[in-house]
Length: 78
Image (tube, rainbow, N blue to C red; front, side, top):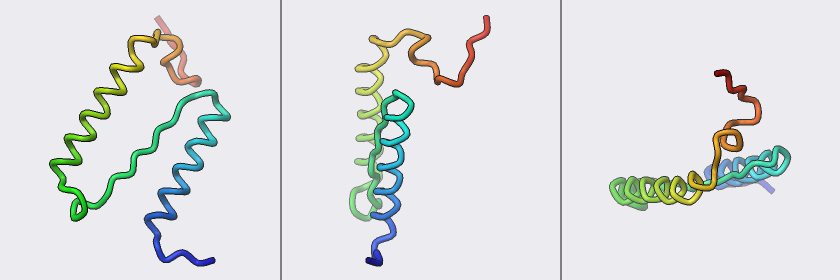
């Protein structure tokens, strides 16, 4: 069935593939839809994103040590 909503198609595609990638690699994934500024004011969206990032940092960083937070492909050299 053809889609008449390219935005929805792209969002669903990115969301599905990011979840699949995360599952395959044992990592977490988060997808946040950002609507047009005509729908929700830019200032409101920026405040939401800043609050979301702060909440994510507060909830994940204390439980995280350097080794577990590094990307699996990264190599730490001291």
